[in-house]
Amino acid sequence: IDNNIVIAIDGPAGAGKSTVAKQVSRILNINYIDTGAMYRAITFKCIKNGLDLEDEKSVVDLCKNTDLKFENNSIFIDGQCVDDDIRTLQVSSKVSYVARIPGVRFYLVELQREMGKGDNVVLDGRDVGTQIFPNTKYKYYLNAAVETRAKRRYDELILKGVKASFEAIVEDVRNRDKIDSTRVVSPLIKASDAIEIDSTNMTIEEVVDFIVNDVRGK
Ligand code: CDP
Ligand code: CDP
Image (cartoon, rainbow, N blue to C red):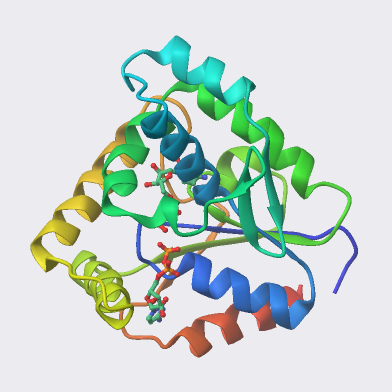
């Protein structure tokens, strides 16, 4: 593969982005950045600090006073690993409200560009191909039917032994899709030059193979 390649994997919740991106990063031996985890980490800290999420200025100020980094694919906020804390339904149900604040996006997009530059990298999120790295030629838009996406999330929790309500998960996924797709700043949308992959009836391996072969072939 080329040098300094940036692979962008975007799409709605539960489409398989992070699972696929992790495997692509392993196979191609390149860095992986989970941009959604960054919005989740900021949301987690806001909740922990009792911030009013409608108070945009306080949320943006909190961002500016936060040390956010990845180490060995784990996410650290102010030195604390929050891999598990950011995956709760409480954080999921709030994150899209934080992610639509323009100042938050401005701050995190700068950080994501900084983290992604200079090395080969795969990023997954909502706006990697449209906003963070619009000039990359490796863009994929991963999608699947909403019930399939919610079911995958549900199965994941059950497997971990976490009690979950399928109805609550479908509602969370639908609600986030709607807020993410309709926000004013960099909404979730397929970049015109992204390859769309509908994974409803595909295995993880099939999706990974498709992307790896496409990257190698370009
Ligand atoms: O993994 P899942 O699809 O559930 O979500 P995620 O990728 O962890 O992202 C959580 C939320 O962060 C999304 O629902 C968006 O509101 C926001 N997000 C965003 O706005 N822009 C990104 N590049 C990534 C995530
Ligand atoms: O990051 P995103 O929210 O798009 O999805 P994810 O966190 O990777 O979760 C997708 C879940 O669906 C994982 O448990 C995968 O094992 C499973 N899955 C998939 O990602 N792709 C398929 N083609 C089939 C299942």
